[in-house]
Length: 407
Image (cartoon, rainbow, N blue to C red):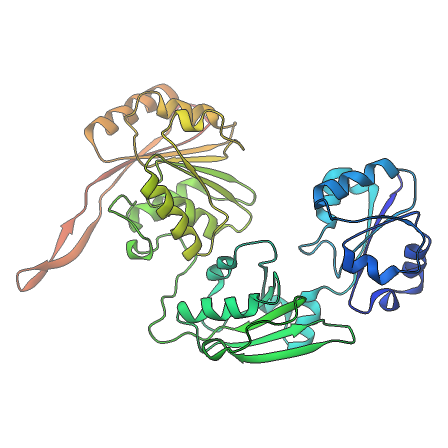
């Protein structure tokens, strides 16, 4: 199949910035699609126009009626770098789409700042929660952030200051590559620009105060990194749990009986393309999970309020891994979690009560899997000296579906 859709990346200089062959492709199109800002850069074209005024999904679907015609979609910069080309390919298939990239906002911003892109964290808060930036706040890290609008830089400066990174230099790069290109610079805790141009990319050099909390992405964050009421998997057990759950690119986790959401949050922190659903029956805890996810840079965590197993009966998408940290002894809960997994899926369940341990033993006898006793003791003051005080033992069950019973 020959491609019938061309997705052409353009910059602020519009069609003048395109190679002659690519400009001719745009000017000879039968159908021209894109956002209003992009279509305005091709005013001389007499092609039928499709814009995104009724939403991106509806606009892409409207392209289907023009199969066989010369269809060109105008997009910003590199259309496969946080751009629309991925959506179009998902709808029509890669064979139907030809992508012609231009310089991305990240490439332009890195060139303006003199930064090497492999050494920079590139992220977007365009249509996404600003708290996504929290995941990347590490001393010495350089960030390039695609903004949502002109108020994003001020909001980002406020976030940086609140997280102990107020000394971080910020540079706002507006309308890069066009006649209105401009830059605004300052320090996060002294930022006075209420609004910048809506089309902007923010460059940040992360500088931490001595008392800033710095969190690694390696699982096992301290308990006080989370809001919780005591219902939280302790850090040593959590690290072992994540090792068994083994987050992989694109994998989906169900954290059932999530408590503080710590396991689901660390799953997402460990693998940027993974997904997670936290299922929690208590509404106060469910709200707390959302706050924890935002504070630790993974606002994409989905929180489902409800009691399992009923809450997971119709839950989608199906998981690649399930963690059961509470309610192990609930009738049919282990079976429901196990049945939700496809072959190769991982189940990890932790128990601290005798009833929970009994259920794990019975379940293992029927389905196979591994059992591990996790015993942790921490040094605490006892009188004038320190002594090791044990935490409650945890019996951890883990299994990979389809592996069969242990020999």
